[in-house]
Amino acid sequence: AFSVVSKLLSQRKLDLLDELVSAEVLQVLKEKLSLLPDNHRDALAADIDAIMYTTEGDVRIYYDDDGIKFVSILMRFWYLNGANLPDEVPGETKVFQIVFGDESTKEKRHLLTANYE
Image 1 (cartoon, rainbow, N blue to C red):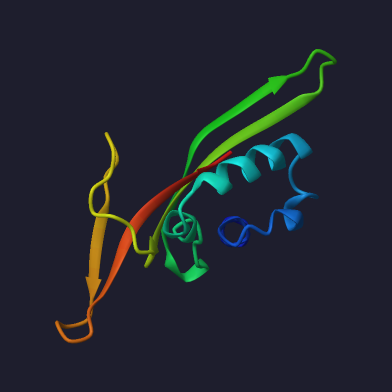
Image 2: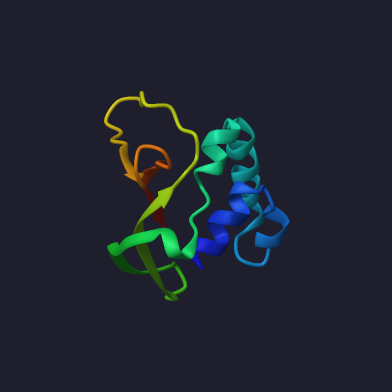
């Protein structure tokens, strides 16, 4: 699911997410995606074979005012992505670059993390 959703986000195909998220969330996504430069939007796409590690970050069970139980699960994904991202990043952000191949055919990828709740 993470791979499919991340690719749809990177391609701005939000209409295909309307069955999965509320209209309010779709509106926020549209606004935020419109502010991203193309290379950052490209970095959202996570190919299923590029996912290196995944773990749950937080699991919460809570009840609404009517007593209906909800479960919230935060998942963290680490994945490789070949998007052309700047070497300098703001604040606490860490960017890891991995080079595949020899000097003549090297391919640089970034190890990125994504949190989905």
